[in-house]
Every structure is written in C-alpha cells, then in structure tokens.
Length: 249
Image (tube, rainbow, N blue to C red; front, top):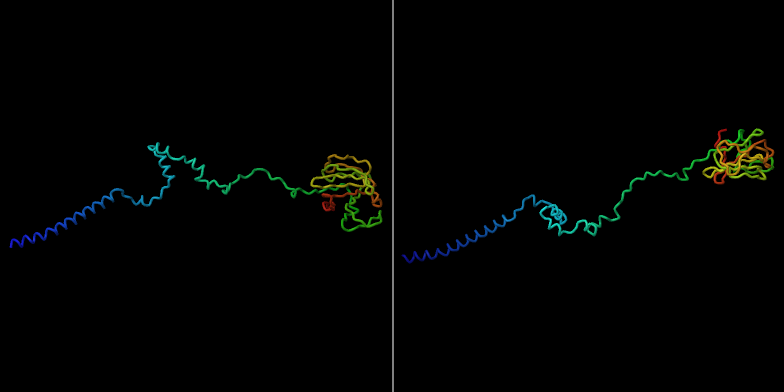
C-alpha cells in the first residue's frame, strides 16, 4: 500500500515541474513586452507630425542657445544657396516685372498734323484745279492739266503767306513768271506765281501766316488772257493737292 502511494507521488512531480517552467516562461515574456512599450512611447500627435527635413533640423539647432559648438560645425546655409542647392530657383526663365516708364510717348510721323492753308488772295477762283482732266487754256490754245488755282485780285494787291513757313526759293519761270515757294512742316509747299519782279522777302526768311510776299502782277506768259490773278499751288512731298478743298466758297 505504501509502495503504491510513493509511485503516485513520483508520477506527479514531473508535471508540476513542467507547469512551473511554463509559468516562468510566460512571466519573462510578459516582462519583455512591457519594457518595450515603456522605453519610447509615441503620442498620436508625434505620429501625425510632418517629416522634418535636414535643413529644418539645422535651423532648429541654430536657434538653440546650448548648441553653439554643434552649429559651428554645420555648413554655411548662404554658401550652399550660392553654390548649387537652389540654383533652379535662380533660373533666367523666371519672369521679371519691369516698372512702368513715365517717359512721354514721342509722336510718330503718322500723327503729324495736316497743313490747312489760308487764302493768299482776296478774290474768287476763276480757273479751277484740274489734275486728271485737261482743261482748255485760251492763252496757249491747248488742253492741259492745271495743278493749281487762279484767284482773282484787284490791281496792286499783294500775295500773303498761306501758312507759317520758310522762303525756299524765288525765281523766274518762263511760263509762270515770278515765282515764290514756301516750305512748311510735314513736307508741304505753297507756290505763288504770276508775281511782280519786286518780292518783299528773300530766300531763307521765316514767314508767318498772312505775311506779305510780293505784289501780284501779269508775269505769267501762259495765262495772259485771264484777268489779273494769283496762280497758287499746294504740294505735299512734291505731289499737287487741290488747295480749294481747304476753303469754303
């Protein structure tokens, strides 16, 4: 009977030893896991914080007063910018905004005003302008264009400047007689013919609108059959223009 009891106790001992070993192993494992969680806990805010670049970390270190020695060992940020780190930001492709200019705009040739000549004599037009349709000339007894107007005058009347200008030339023409030509701005010219031989101006003189030029006489051979008149022409860059277009009849 005693032998049977001893045998039962001998069979239970190994099971108890195994159970104690398992409990000991579980305790060690639990302690290890617990220590891992308590070493460096990470808060939800830190988990969601944005990633910090190396440049930002450098700036944070530079702001810390206790890290003067560490900052002195860091590279110069300005020097890095000047070399290569941000070269793509200094590209010439970046648009440059220019400040508006306060300079006045210079008028172009197309904005130059037109010349509006005044009447150089007092009378009516007795022989009209005709540049593309020939008109009969009683003196010459032929048909020809008339790139001017003939203005009736009273004896002794003096032709006056039709606009401000300069006396360009004074000469004797074999058909138009005594001629005075004034030059004006914009390539304009005014021509005064059938004058007397005693002009009141000389070449190079500056004249104003209405200044006297010369007494009107009968020197134009090609218009002898017409009443006393002033032969007047208007040109721009050498091309005749009808001066009567600027006058109201």
